[in-house]
Length: 408
Image 1: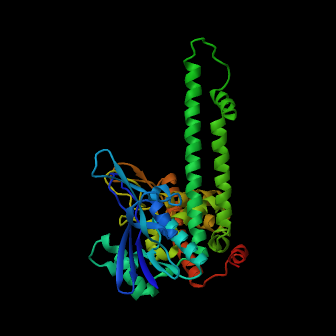
Image 2: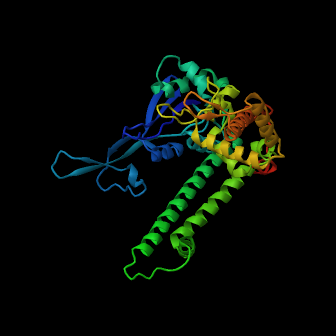
Image 3: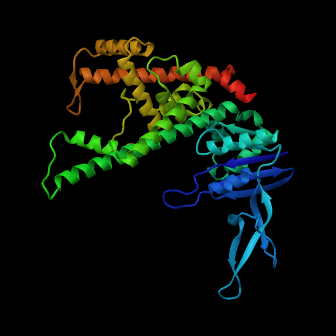
């Protein structure tokens, strides 16, 4: 049995610094370290086909079976001549391997793939540790040695970890589908904006002066309906939305927690789920509340981006929660809609009239009270969500029938 620690990292920073994924492998008393510099290297490791040593090709040797990416060209001692090298040894995932990784973060896709591969192989496991537990074990040392620490912990203290199961892969899939939908939506909006500006420019800059009558927006809609690029992007967004909704509906956390909530649809739920991924990442409710940016500051204000301050929350989770807060306003008869109205009443009783703040601006106007009530509702909702989601995990809730059939 081998024990593997994997510190997944984004391969290159915005400044261009190389940040390869680090792997530490222990087999008996032998320890080996490997760098996975690209996603292709990760894929080769997954398939147990990552080259680790090379040799010169012999004359007349058939190398047609070797992938082109594994053939290295190096300069010869002779001028204007190169020598081809092919792999002699490979490394990667083996049957029975026990892999330790961090719960959440950039390594979710890799963890899901490793888990599925070991499931196909029939034995082995991928275990993930919550970041707060890893931080405690790391102590004062830097993160640079996390791959070695993960390898040691997965060997010595496997109880600190959670296995990656079918349920976890489904959660990770939702995260991927949500990103696809967001990217498709951004691409469609950008294409529409470009087309709108092009239409307006063509009309205003017409040398013939044949300015058409009617609303500019109507003219834009006519062009949009016949534009092949925009039409294809609209279709792409619809397909991404369909995949996302299907992926969310397969989750136990959707069935047991999100679906019964009035005003909570699949897209809003997916935005929250995709950022949280696994509730076990958070040791307590206040950690999740702060992560989602719905916490209360020491001066009783709710956080927002201000000049000179760092927004240390997840903006996507915060945005989706705010969209849910807007639904609470519209769904006044729902449980959280009623809570919001009650919060407005309590806040108005506490602040019966508007006042002038230190900055000269009015506070506790009707609009201010309304926003305060929304944020207070979202704070309580996130605390409730943490309790319910944690309880669902601890109870090992029965998966959906669809998952049971797939697992069988």
